[in-house]
Structure formats: C-alpha cells, structure tokens
Length: 316
View 1: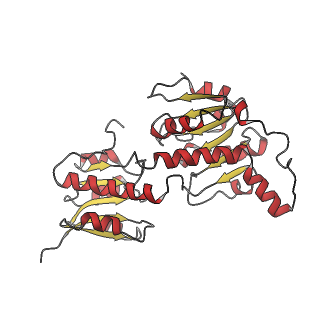
View 2 (view 1 turned 180 degrees about the vertical axis):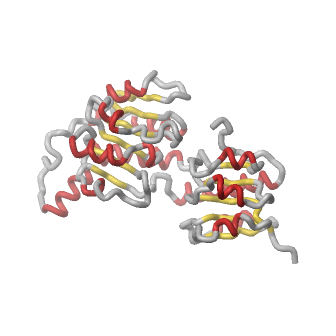
View 3 (view 1 turned 135 degrees about the horizontal axis):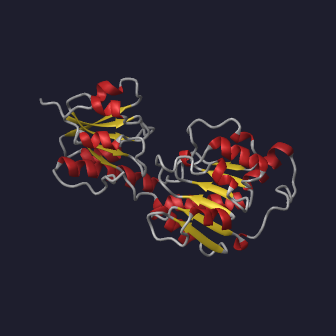
C-alpha cells in the first residue's frame, strides 16, 4: 500500500485531534503530530510531507531550507505569523497561510474584561485580602475614577481593535484610535499618549513596532495610563514596563501576552499593579474549533490547486 502524504502538526498542546481527523477522513492525507522540536529537521525533510501546521514552533530560514520540496503550504495556527520566515518560504514556492479572523469577539471580550479588572484594581484587592488579610475599600488608594470620565486609546483598528472599540464605546468618556493603515481619529500615536487614561494594543508584532511600548514612549504618556495588551508580548519592553509600574508612570498593566512567554519575568510578578492571563484571550471551544477547521480547509484548498482564503500579506 502506498504511504499517505503527510500534514505535520508541530509541537501543539492539543490532545484531541478529532477535528482534523474528521476533515481529513475522506482525503489521502495523514495527520502526523510532532510533540517536540528535537527531530524537527528530520520530520520536515520527509518527502511525504505536503503541509505543515505550526502554533509556536519557529519556521526559520534554516528550517525552510531543510523542508522537503513536496511541501506546498505552511500554516500558522493563529493570527500572527512573525515566527515564520515568509520570504524564504515564498522563495521555495511554499504558500504561507494564517487564520486572521477567528476569535475576534473572544479577544475583544477579553480586552474589555482586562480593562474592567485593571480599572477596578481587582487583582490588587484580591492579593491584598488573601496575603495581608486587609479588608478595606481604599486598598488601591485614591486613584480610582469613574470609567465614564476616562479616555480610552486604541492602537490598531483592525478586526479586533474595532470590535473592542464598539464594545467599550458606552463605558468611557471618549475613544482615541490610531492606526497607520486604517482610517482613525488620531493622526499620530502621540495623541494617544497625550490624551488617554487607558491604552490598549491591537496590532501585530513586526520589526518596526517591536518594543513599541518602551522607556521613551512611556515618558511621552501624560496621564499615567492603564496598559492593556492582548496582541503580542514583544510590543512591550518588559523591563521598561516594570520600571514604569514601580515609579507610577504606568498606573496598572493587564497583559494576556508576555515578551518571553511562557517564561514570566521574575520582577514583573512581584508587582501589585499587574493582572496576567496566559495568552488565553482567543480561547473558547467555538473559537478553537473555527481556528483548527480553517487551517485544515486552507491546506486542502492549496492541495486541490485552489487559492487559499487566508494567505499572509505578501508585502511584508
């Protein structure tokens, strides 16, 4: 019997692959789960491999050079694709896809939840009660103001940023938005830094905006804002954030992503004015199903000679 062509699923925390198996049941393709990166190059160089799905495993230029010529598509299981060397893939005629439109509501909802948690200092209340046995409404000090008096700044007005803006509109005084590629009501990011009490990040990570939130940009923030990040950890310089939380330049930070996740900065977690969630903003059972289904469907489109629905932008 002829060996089936393979779709590699790299280093995933998933344990139940029934979604993928159901979608592939009527095809000639076999799903191969690679649980760690130890023998990554031997897996990707297998001539039976026609597609690769990656969640966190970086597809570097060196990895791409070892990928079998039979491989036609690499898909990032998620919104960002910064872990894939897209240029080298395209030079090898490997299509690169991602899934940019799953979990939009979930991530926006999570950002809303982080705003409320940070604004009301829920983590600070909880930790103080549990660790110090203090029961008093003035635990955060006199820094709390009505949400309706605060300005919200949104950096990035794509699917998630605009959805988040819609959800938050009735809660805050005014929304300031900045996006260099999408019409927004600010022409400069400094308008966000000047005017906003809460700043929420909704942009992909690129070489240009790496450490967008840095010591320099924090110094330009006039209102000691709450910082929300549900996008990419690398947008924030962790050490600059730690220092800003210590000296009060940032009043509170609520983060779903970290610069070196899953590693957690030892100084960051010592601070009181921090709320962390484990890159979970995207997650519901429905969004996970949509994510995995769309990834497999695009692979099947490419293998059938059709155009994928979710190719990464080629002008990167």
